[in-house]
Image 1 (tube, helix red, strand yellow):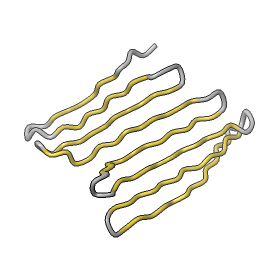
Image 2 (cartoon, helix red, strand yellow; image 1 turned 120 degrees about the vertical axis):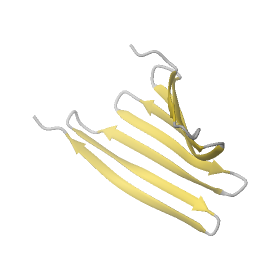
Image 3 (cartoon, helix red, strand yellow; image 1 turned 60 degrees about the vertical axis):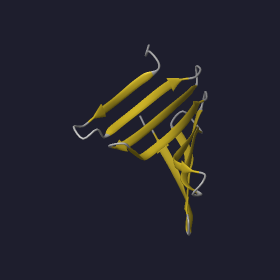
Length: 114
């Protein structure tokens, strides 16, 4: 069994930091926070939540959310087992920043043959 929380990070000589914190919130729910700094300034950060059901996985990621500027990225994933060998799902990506926004929908399948 893995121990939680998991803290991983590295810092370079200029003081820039890449770090992640992973926490298991329950038997099926896991969260992660990741951030990156360049010296004393935050440049990237994201928050993930993942739920693993008996035959599906669902996840949501928020990337660089900034409520004051009205910008950020939201990614939602869903993968459902249809049979023991076939899983189908999709991903929805929405991004917004001042003057620009967009959405991308992707569909995916996984087949595991004998």
